[in-house]
Length: 459
Ligand code: HEM
Image 1 (cartoon, rainbow, N blue to C red):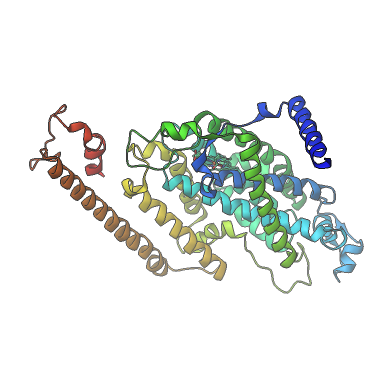
Image 2: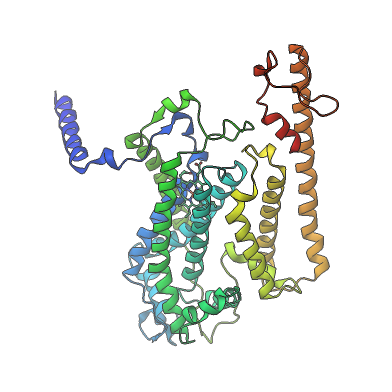
């Protein structure tokens, strides 16, 4: 009796809220049922991580002071550092040690940034290998590339905010590189460096981190999701050029509505994400390194966060000047940006795109190698023979593996095709002289799509 009354009241209340708030109208488009696997929602995971960054960042703003002015408050004494420490560092110290749950707040904001970048890299590589950038999603990819740059910008500008010596040093190295950007560098210089003082730099980084870049990220994310709404989720990767744009009719009819299904599906993942993030932050809270200008500090290291380690190691290579390092970075960015126009083949399956798979694998190997190397030996110069000895195998082994798989795939494809032709007693689609049979031959319709066959031969 009570249960029935309770359920009815709950339904009515919820119906009222749903109707007046117009919730069904906000809903995003329905998705095919088979997409309910984490691999189809990598972008939504990044967006979830971004949302937590916004919330935790706003809470940090209540306490953080973007100032290098020395303070003689309890933060210095508590740290056993009676000499003055900059207010930016001191306020971070205060949040960690005196604000309730402050340590968790700072740690989850930092680890959340790592998680967002890591998830973004997964999202990027998933789209790369499965050809999600192909027509009609070229603009989604390009806006995604801008999102990636902006996200790295968030990481760069946030690193210096606690005003620790290590982050200050790394930011200086990063600035040397950023200011070498062709033409942009000279324009960026006065904007970033302000009056050349520590305070000028901190204020600019703070403004970029809490206002400019989040606004840009929000706007780009809006465009990214609007494009996603326009084109829908990319169908599974395929070797069939005709199928690449659409789902089967059955799949199309099985659309699962956004509200409440997708919403709660994502809520489940978001809660799991938050649980993990808070758990890790509680077990391994971040330790605040020493502040800028601490004369008592024994040594000063220069090390960026893990996602920029590869670039720092690149500068350690003997002969690689900042101009070359920033040149390499630019080439990589342009490659990613215009990728949809470089890879023109109509098939999305990785087995049909050996060159791009090779490039993707090699770049991944290159980044992992330099990141680990940078972490193990930060700032130590590397002679060219050592560089060649470590990098060349990545490209060589990769070329051999991708080439071997591609050769096997092509051979298997031809064998299957010939077996099918023999079974159908049809003339070969590949005659000995390389010519193709005329269209309209009886039974021709049951062969693989004509456009797929010659294309598979071209590779
Ligand atoms: C802040 C970073 C990013 C966020 C928050 C984000 C968010 C999203 C979301 C929510 C989707 C809808 C489908 C899904 O959940 O996977 C999506 C799709 C997509 N994103 Fe991103 N994205 C980001 C960065 C990138 C980057 C760096 C790229 C590539 C350069 C990219 C390329 C794409 C493409 C091609 C799609 C369509 C994929 C499909 O239809 O399966 N995104 N993104």
